[in-house]
Picture (cartoon, helix red, strand yellow):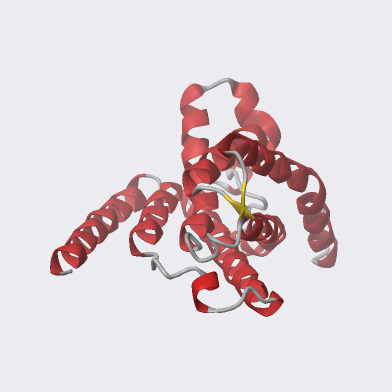
Amino acid sequence: MRGFFSRKLLAGLIILISAILLFFLDPQLMIVPLFLLVKIFSSKSKSLREEVSSSSIKLSKEFMFLTIIGFLAGECLELFAVLSNLPYPPEKRILFLPDPLMDMIIAVAYYLPIAILLALFLIKIDIDYRLVFIAGGIYGILTEQNGAIFFSFNMIAWLYVAVVYGSYLAIPAVAGESRLKTLRRRVHPVLSTIALFLLLVINFYTLVRISMLLLLIAFNIPM
């Protein structure tokens, strides 16, 4: 037991040092150490079937938990993006909006629908967090900057975006790992990965865009 915790503390220290270094190199990459920290320190709790009945109330609590984790992971990613873009003039910042505060507010309309979709998927389908990472990475490549990253055919940019998006979307999958394992439906790994990817893309072009449009109108921000 002591060795187990020692390994965890050592791994946590290494990741913390990596996060500090990444902060000075590229703050947006700090999402990767954050993902690794969640993976290391996520509790291996018993499945809900072993502890309580699978009532709708318990499922609702699990849905709320995963939604909150997914949303917070998204807002952390956006905060890291803001920190990465602060040295640049407003017209060259790659953000939703050049103003950092307004960008964080508008980001709610982007990350909340994704968090809800992912939470619903995770409580229904038994999918490994590594497959979520893959689906999220491909989704990021295709949708980042409205497809500009994909059509740049820059392999380094593809890898960068894939790691960032994959880490961000895998955080709730890791945080909820084993919590509903026996209650979720088993699907072929390839099918579940493709299904999640397609749902993320559809969500991006429908609910995400609608929610962002409504928030822009609510704050009277020119489009």
